[in-house]
Length: 393
Image (cartoon, rainbow, N blue to C red; front, top):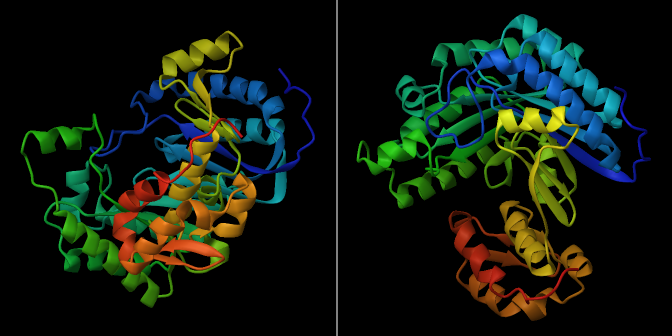
């Protein structure tokens, strides 16, 4: 069935596609995925129908597309071609759209990389996580350090814009060991680096092992020091931190799609467990491939729920997301959006945090200091407590 007639775009937004397949579930991951790859064809058929149903509701042109998961690179070339064709057919894309795909070493071949480029994908993000065997085994990754090196080498032949993901803060991890991973990463001259602190999410295999006493987590103070070391080390190598976990060689190599999340820009999500944000409404799909397929066979969007954020919730999110960015909260934009004086609401608390060396603030911005990076959650909580309660905007 052809897509419904498109509505003329008004503003730029993003698309997120959740591919719910993995060869094996990583021990630390709480994102929805399954390992039954035989369901791939059924998923693709349902996905195409979702694109057709959702597209009339998307009132923006798409200047970013991010294929995540799960493991998008586990898809066959034919399956991914069908997904990309449906997206290009059903949604409006700008000529300079950033089109990213997450890939796992061990699922990348030269043939696939060439096909990705021919489909219009212009940015690839490779989930290396570590170049050290014992860390990969602890995290439950399917690839070896050698396969990670091979994948990065092959990717460089096809993509100028390659991102690389790493995880730090593992039990017993030393600064020296973490530095070795960072140094190895830079030998490939990636455009972008994401360095994520290991977190123990509820319901994951790793958290279960932690609760059973199989290992001791890295002490908070040591994990915080690794964050500070990461910022200092990468800055000295020409990679500027622009978000608490993200670094780029230059501003134009930042993840334009992820920047939408941190600036509360609109985006539409497709696939099981995908979220959409059409300000001030957030909605999310069912976290079950079976339910996803069943809904779409009935010509219904596979929604699990939705909410309208009230003014206080939007302010709290603006504070949290703004402080994640190194540039911080843009005070004039914040005041314009919420029709209030930032100083009147947050001035006293912010002044105290500035005096403690945790915040930097002037008339234009309010941002975490280098020292404040490790206290993001507690600082956000202090400022959020100042938000006035109110009805919807």
